[in-house]
Length: 217
Image (cartoon, rainbow, N blue to C red; front, side, top):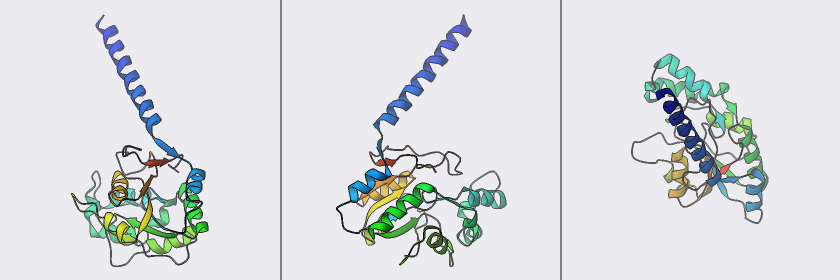
């Protein structure tokens, strides 16, 4: 008797979670690459911004390596200067460019838009991230990657978005979307891959922003 009741309760719970998930999915403002292109068709060239990790690069291999080397079992490595020196100066050779980013960047290149990269990575004295992104995405007249770092209680991406007059910002994290909205510009969510080392996964569409379909890859 008790087993049957427990089974029924478990079944109802699973059904409720699934229904909630479907409802969430239905409320998301999905957007395709073609729809983004159409929305920009009659607009002059503009400045657009991209986050780096999990937006244009699947960079989890470098972060996985950093955890194993500097702080196995926890995330203390992300405050270590030694890790950031390695990450910003070579570990991105193991990062995989996201196909959705390639297509988006090509779209903006053809329009003549200026492309900026803004990352919450810690700034280091030297970096090869700019060079790698320029080579990977075939950029000309490129700008150096902007490294903001992280400050608890403050979104450090808002300032460079405003200073560089960026009009669209693409990012995977809630903080990316919050920064764009706080700056009063268009925010488009890039979905984070499920096997990213950056857990937990953000709630896509939770700010009412557009979410690019099939952008996990």
